[in-house]
Image 1: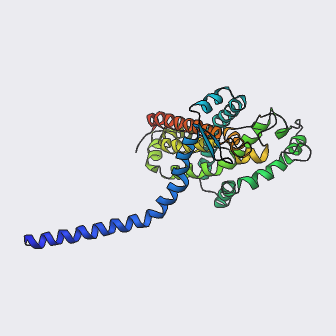
Image 2: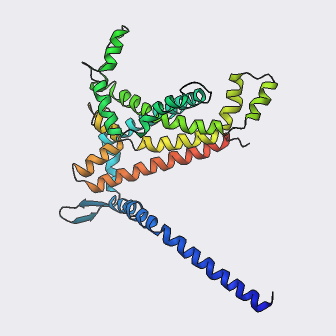
Image 3: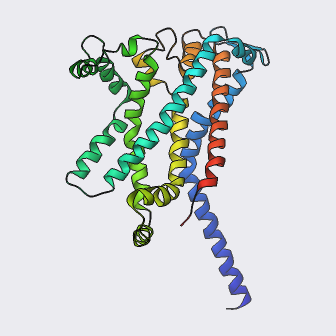
Length: 305
């Protein structure tokens, strides 16, 4: 090909490439626009509001610097909500991950009606949290709820469940574990099926039993899956709201009050948007810090194959 012909060919390719790039950006432009409008812009607005006393009704914005954050340090309700949120996170994340892994190992074997039972365990994940929480509220009822009926049948004492400050948070955690279990099971099941069977065959030839194979092969090779599940569940757990709002409303005596619920009340019940924005920023820093810590720490145990 002559030099002028080669130059023309390259120019044509350049125009086609530019046109394809333009078309690609046009296709993703609506998504980028919506993401910026409903995600980026509110986040920036929240950051700005956290430094102001916001009176939306009067249209007044008073810059107060770090006063909102200083008030959080002495706010006993916020401190209680933070402690409850931490208790919720450190309980639901490992328990739901362990139970999800055990169920995944169980369903990784072939048996009759396997798909049917998978659907049953996964159904809570696709069920509305509010609708499921309303059903569980009736089940937790200390007078005629099914849980106390079952306890009575086996001779155990009945529990106040949501009506007591000693058991209310535990009751919410049990519901949340039930809700997240199916998702964790499916993700772990996908991770199990991605492990090459040659590892297990070699371990069997070397005389390793099922327990040794589980701890020496399955657990290490599922490290990336576990990292994803722990980070994903931690982010969701820090943002818990629906089940607490429906089951207890933060009570009794703020025993189930969590950060997002307190944030909601500050913003939409007391119209203290600046203070609520400061709570949102603190929550964001919590989530970011925990996520980075989990990600960096988990990298030590990841095994590639």
